[in-house]
Image 1 (cartoon, rainbow, N blue to C red):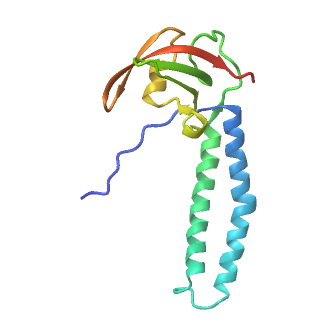
Image 2: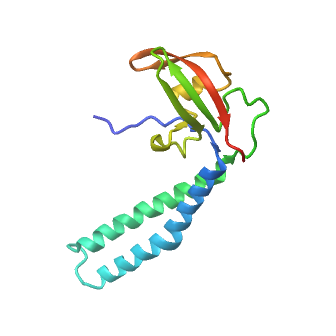
Image 3: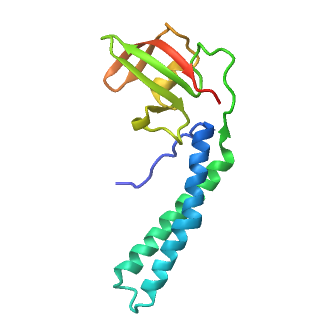
Length: 167
């Protein structure tokens, strides 16, 4: 069995101002707080002697690698992200940053916000603009019918409402 993984398609470079701020805060926390704490813990563990059987040392080094990987990723990603700070001209259509209410064939409604792939969160009802449903909704207006391909088959939705947060 091969370990080859095909390259992932590039994700959209868009982000809301709140999302960009959250990524910057995470980078700041990792670099200025978490990494020095873990470095100190690894240093203390290294003073205990034999490192080959020192779980604190081994775990600390692993943690440092993970922190460094995330810091590198965040720095590179923040360089290419475009913060969208303006509202679209036509606020009756679905664009990036919109809060959308859709209704399925059974009359059940769902509400979510279309955001960049770096900030999607199902707990906050944030949906990535790279998701199939968001791609189908982008550019459509209120009362439009939308078909979305899902693993279970084609689903139809109607756009009930579109709102934007003031920036």
